[in-house]
Image (tube, rainbow, N blue to C red; front, side, top):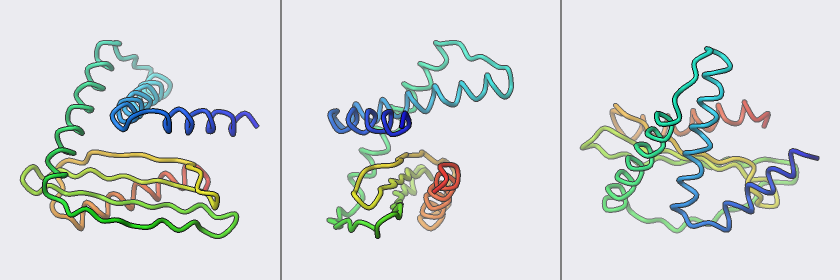
Length: 150
């Protein structure tokens, strides 16, 4: 029951924020979790200034890539359809920018009521083409699904 409580809190919190605020929160959560794992598994504790520096740099990089990709991509208007009862549906996509060999991929997992069960974005470097960008997005979605027990 506690798990539903924090998921509901997180979904409500994200729904009430701007897109930019959500990006910053996600990056912060990711950085804190990464550093928690680094301390737990490797015994290495990062300095707070290093973590804050990572958050700022990652946010700046995503914002820059988002602006660049927004100017080069075609906007689609997809209609999401819910899965059957008891099924988790995971959508993923990637955007590739050839000039920098970078891509941004994202995934979102929703249940049959449309409630968000998990979501994430990733910045990839040294991506050779759009097929590789989509493959990375797919792989990240599969890894998340496995880790979450979907």
